[in-house]
Length: 166
Image (cartoon, rainbow, N blue to C red):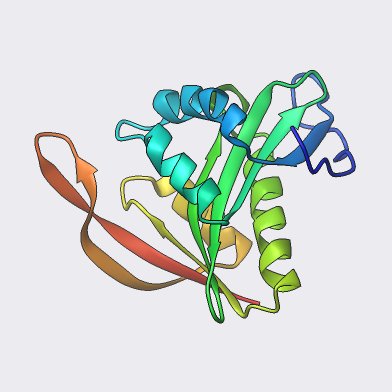
């Protein structure tokens, strides 16, 4: 673990108060990341997807508690004038405790620090919980990508494209 940030205050709504720390995602973190990815998603990213993001120089961040347990992560691809949030995931047992908002705050801060003007993401229409979180955070729907996500039975699911202007 490297690039430690100062601790984030404990979450009041958490069943046990957590001190959380951001670190740059390293290849050594990928096994922990994959454990969460494979638990949370029916069509998870692969080890290669995460390695490619790290090796491409994307903003790849993890959030660990004071004991080193992984709470969540995100991968952000900056471009010329905006940043694309490629993946944002919270450990299943910690969802609903504000960790996703902490991850969004960090992604937004990085986007702002790079003087980029917007944060973009895709979300499945079936992931209504995440879509509502993004809307409350200030993201607006700007389009649809047809057949973007894999779905059961060799089907595809559209993606809702959302944008947060900074």
